[in-house]
Image (cartoon, rainbow, N blue to C red; front, side, top):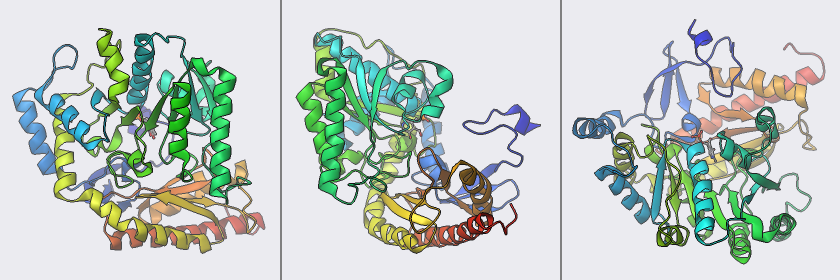
Length: 452
Ligand code: PLP
């Protein structure tokens, strides 16, 4: 009855036997049968500090609820929303001083676009209405954010895009002819961005949006020089540069703002998921001084608002999350263990079903292939592997990971940032077992010997 009443997100209805999770503890979650799983996906890249801080966070939430449960950031504000904006300005690289709060990631991306447009109105360039984004990238589902999203099948039912966006190649080096040569690869990608801008009309481009490491397609790490190249192109053509850090920010790559790893300061940064470690829903757009000053100087209004954006209970939880990050050295843990996780993951490339391993921080993918030549699985094989075999076998292995084919077939992990070396080894061991069996399963099917 419940499965019928609940509309699942991005899932087929009538799942049969959905995984129903009712309890969490540290990096583990437990289903309604009491079975334990390592949440190696951090609840879709959200639960940075895991599930063990409930009491401490509840105390912060209770304090806020019994002081002032709610007020908006429309005209009024609250001490916690102000304090959170201030803390984020301290954590972000220079100049990203302003926060606009939302309830989640899509709203943050959407708000960033509205702020971009207000900026160009304020400086007398209202014709800048176009944007550059990347193939297969996922930037959310509200109609503005969906225009940036580069996964065609998520867009088709909803008609023409709300924003005129050109999608350019992402940074997937694995199948790129020049992917082995960082310099040539980076040069070609940046040239493509520039060509797209020239074709669309440089004076009409408002925004270049990209994730530091692109999630959809499987943890697509940029070649060295890519982000500084994007910065340079944005500056040359008078466009704003936005890092969508809904996944990569808040410690996933070992920094609050992931683009700091590339020595670049974007004009806009979106955060969500890990901002509260998902103890409450919240998102934010961080905007640079140079974006906001003209709006303020023009005496203009940002014509955008979200009732619950910056909800004081969420803000109190985000502040507590930041305090926990600092006290319990969460970023330091990610930085210290990134090389260990990288070498564990790279060991998987010896498995015949793994064609490529890539990632950074606590955010890794293995691309799954059919044979030693790296042939991709076809549609029917993907269904069998990614939606048939893997979810079931992962469940048996007590591991939550993501099998995905918005690009080619990949399996991804993003462990909670509190994971220690032993847990990371356990995750990768389980993954290796699952992938070994997946290879045998696909081989059996290919030779016609196997069952389903
Ligand atoms: N941007 C990126 C990079 C994301 O990964 C997501 C969600 O996964 C979003 C935006 C949208 O966030 P939300 O699902 O909170 O609306």
